[in-house]
Length: 170
Picture (spheres, rainbow, N blue to C red):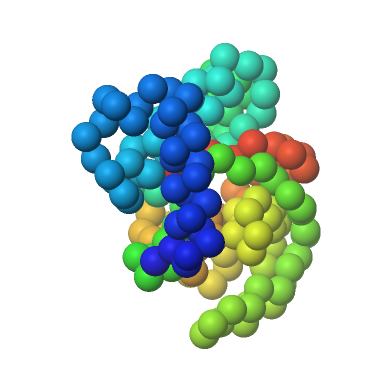
């Protein structure tokens, strides 16, 4: 569940983007449905823009549990991942790699995992990283991060740079 600030920010963004796109009069939904519809449209437009460029970018599809590394419109690497469980959903939206760490310690409510390999933070405490503690790729099992097999995480770590766009969607 979103906290008040996240919901308020979502409403402001939805309103501004909705007006800009002319959606407020065209979509009969209100509340969270409007926020979700506008967010999906913004994500689709971001992906279209990235595909029209030569930019390296990462797509994460939480529905199919797939990650694709792109160079413009060309997929260069694809892997099965594990994103967040329902109670710890992986946030959707457009982000960018903020920091990279060969090894990181990850702690949260109910977990403390040392030496998480090839960690790339893209939104606060959310990251794409290697997972040595499970082999359930293709199934949502994380606390919101994007878990990748260690060898795949290493490839992504060396391919991506700080600022590489990351688009996470349903």
